[in-house]
Image 1 (cartoon, rainbow, N blue to C red):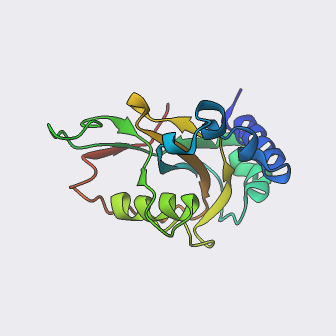
Image 2: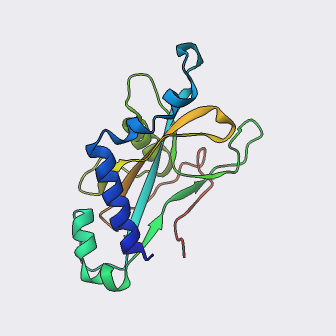
Image 3: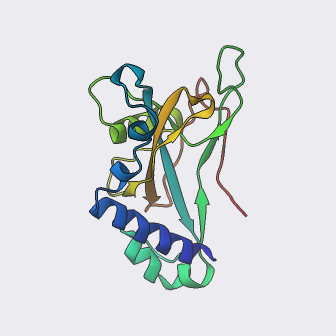
Length: 177
C-alpha cells in the first residue's frame, strides 16, 4: 500500500468513526474498569502526518489526495519525539507521539494540542496550518498508568517549523522511509 492509499483509508476510517460516535465504541475505560473508583488518569497524543512531494499548497486531505504531485511522487512523514533520559521518568528515552496528561477543565483534544505546542511548538489548532482528521481508539499507556486518546492531524503548510522544548524532547523523527 502506498502513502496515498494509506491516507485515503485512514481518512475514510476516521470519517466513519466520527460520524458514528467513533471513539466511544472503543472507549477502553468502559471495557476495563466498571467501578468509578478505578478510573485512570487521561492523556492525549497527536499523530501528525506531514505530506512531502506534492505540488503547490493544499487546504485539506481531499485536495492532497487529488494533487498530481502527491499522486506521482508524494509520501507521508509521521512525527515522533524522543524523550530526554531522566532517572525519575517512567517514559525516559522513549520514542513517542507528542502529548501528555490532560489538565483540569480541558478536553482531550485540547490536551493533545497544548502538549504538542509545549513540546515541539506546532500550533495544531490553527486550521490554516493543520487539518484535524479525527480520533483513533483509546489505548493504555506503557505500564497501564493512563488511558491515552490519539488525535490525528494533517500538516497543510510545509513551512511549519518546530521549536523543541529541551525539557520535554531530546530529538524528533519523521521520515519513515
